[in-house]
Length: 245
Image (tube, rainbow, N blue to C red; front, side, top):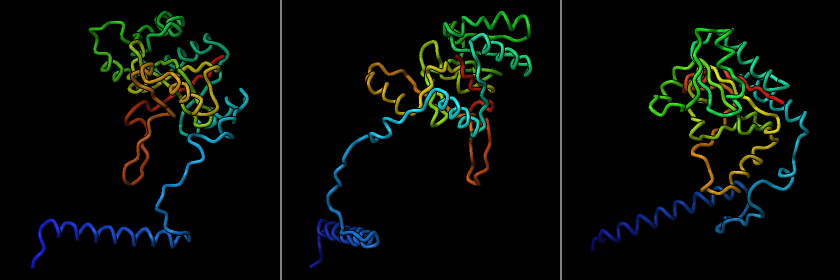
């Protein structure tokens, strides 16, 4: 008597389970321990205590961040004040002959009065603050910008990463689309470990999270299947991290 369709499916399922069991037993034998059928008990979740307690001094954090950021092709500068940061950005803008600059619409950047200084030093340059005109195509503007200027919300020394949060006055396009990027990082926002930044988001709760949280570690880097590295294809090709304070 021939088997029914249901019996055929059941037989295939049993064969598959038997094959799977042989495969798992073979792995266990190569690892030299019994076949495990229960998931292991986790003694803790998250980072271990020794890593939670790990912290560098301020000088170590700055040195490690600079080393890690430069190791992936980023540029850094250690500046004593926002006035020095302003001078650095203006000088680089003049040096590059930039025609169009876009910045985040933040009070700290507005206080620099970059527009006035650029008018004096580079009259042909135009600087716009993000989202100051709701009718404007700001994403397209950011994509055409020679330079973008952003205040970092956090930075992480161990990974050489900059954290930028999205908001109505802080469009993500400003940090992702211009050809050259300047990130201003107040040194009191520089942390040792990534967990110090992530823990704050966790504590804030889902409702308090911003629309976007972006971790940026140097210029845009892309590799094809041949592993040929190209800089700046999907984002800024030149990135400056300015440690200030």
